[in-house]
Image (tube, rainbow, N blue to C red):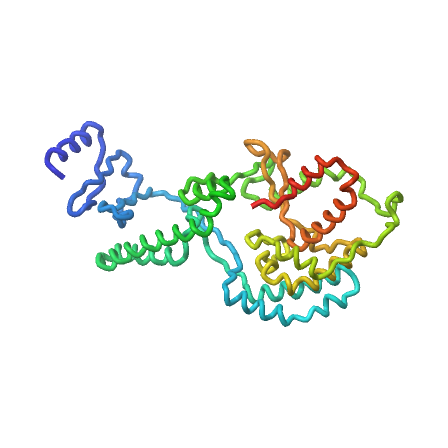
Length: 384
């Protein structure tokens, strides 16, 4: 630092009763990055860190004496679906004998047999993997990049400049490659098909996302997530709790049915299963839509048998009555009595609904307003 600049700093320190805390060079052999303060007694000594990116100025970490570390790491579980795992699963399902499903006596037993086989295979070929994820992690961040960053920091702290520079350049290349791969596979195709989601992904990549929305519940601690979920669930139940349950035996106008339910064939179900969007999230059953679409042919026979039995008995399997419900606030700030439930159901239950909707529309199409029919069909178009 030059004499003139040193004189200016000294004047500032003397007149403002401040103290300069940086005692080490920050660029080459010069101390160009300063910390002037009058509360230095409440902080530890500054620590030099590696430079950011291609900057030739080192970074400085200045920690307070009393610091409460917040556990911002969260554990997330997922099922890795690599190509060799999918091939192994495909070999299993191609040789699977569905006799246990076809020979079951009723709809529920057939569904239990199907899901017992599928869940066992999914657990065997696609075991759950648990990883720690930081809340501030970028979506393209990977374990490989994290390990390289740790090695780079270790090389810097030990003074191994040659290794540090190699790792610094490698980290930069890996980050650049990860960003390009993420954009090409997750973001770029959305620009034409879904501009809104494209814009959201761009904000996520640049770190401009909003913080998670919390729904305050009167009388419940904000950290008690189970109690909050139960209160929200009670609020949703109150909407229809005053209604008397529907008794099918009292619907004399519609019973008994004149005709039997239409009979489905495996090729009908295969056509619907092959249309499933593989990128969608799986429902409560834990069976990935990617597997259902990939092996639609193998699943068409047992699913057809379950659907035909379900339509004939008028019974819906308990697995298809479950849903993952997400409360979406309708007001800002969010209130517990102003929430909209959005449900994620199983793919196979949606397939069963599709056939019922198709039959109903064919039956009433000539008896309703054509404009309302067009509106109904538009509202049911799949979203991307």
